[in-house]
Image (cartoon, rainbow, N blue to C red; front, side, top):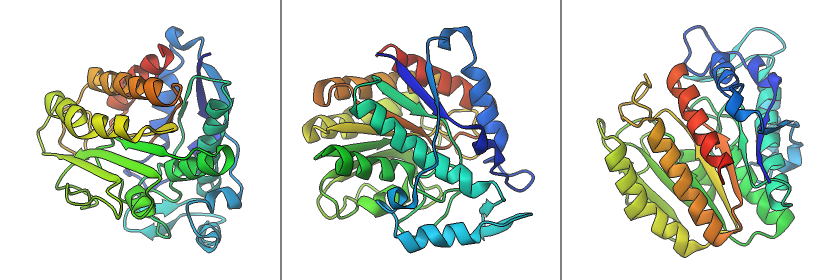
Length: 309
């Protein structure tokens, strides 16, 4: 079995204001990186659009309709201070959720060893009924709930190494003992959540915040001490990654100093947990990463490691 790449050109049609960090060039940079010869054996599929009832696994159906109605027919509308919609944004968001669901299907059915979903906009800041932080639908949350509903996965684990805390994912699963959410992130930093003391109703939230200036050593220690042991003890039936690459040292929106080797290392460690607990079933969904070179190189390291699985 191989690694599956899921993406869609419609994700380029989500336009943001001039100078906005979450821009179409992010996906173009990733696509160029994955055109390299070493990725010639990478299986590739187009992300479908998720039906509303699939998104409603993690969000109220009237919230989905609210986002649809907010979508402009021309120009651009501001959803909050840093989240906006263009005419192509709603389809792009549907493709992101649909790509995550497709990845679950392919991995759970054993058609691929693991999958990487390269779509935008990202999703982990989207709360149960609130878009924010460039995000509309929480793709990893939808994927986890879908794996549970469609395939009877009793326990799903989500590991988030984006530099910003996934407040949306934490919000959605705060009172859900069947989903373990683990996050490394810089703190203090947007969105202001993610303290060690935030543990969820059933102690299934694991936050391992890092400080500005921290690098690979501190990141690896946080994973080794706080997160990997909890993952092994939880024994998930599927492992989902919120793969944000904005903890890279080049990224303009934060102050951590990870490099490509750190992303390769954490990918390998998470795959080892998945091999031990859930038959290697890993679904990785792209989140942040705003320096184009840092993003492209980090995604390449991440996917190369997935392919070695």
